Image 1 (tube, rainbow, N blue to C red):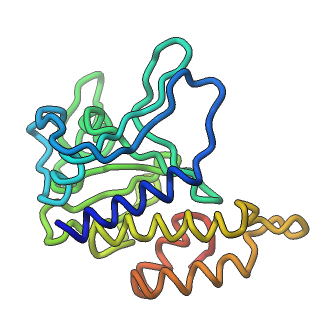
Image 2 (tube, rainbow, N blue to C red; image 1 turned 60 degrees about the vertical axis):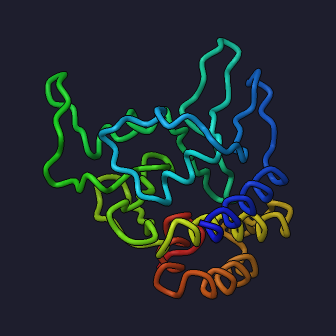
Length: 218
């Protein structure tokens, strides 16, 4: 798990340097390295892979707290042209609603078309990020609301590496990635990001991820 640990630690460092505080929260959301987290935060019905177990048992992910003391389900990660919402482990079961479990007339039922090993760990505006906990290295997929899954990373480790790259390149542009005249993402930002991601993820996954992040269409 050393590679995964290094990938997550690098992501946390990059995220911490780039995040902006929100005035209406009395406590900011956090992603911190904290080994030996309680193992009972996640419902036993969710089949975690070794990689997901390592993530949730060694890193504390906690949503921000509003002024009314309500704690949100996860942490916002500003990726330039979109915000990724990474779920806290104790909210993971709740966040499978609408995917593995669907509501029919006030009752929740397991959707037979949804693989139980598809674990939704994050989303962008209800478009999920899914880890397949039944496959080696815990590959990561995404989809648009109600659509088919498509691959964005061959492993959980490389997914966190990719998030770090997006944050780093966005930071290099001071977060100003939109061309004021065309209102489109700057081509020089896309080119730099694409080159770095292709080295990390390969062309197919890079194309899919950039499209999912609304940075460049396939």
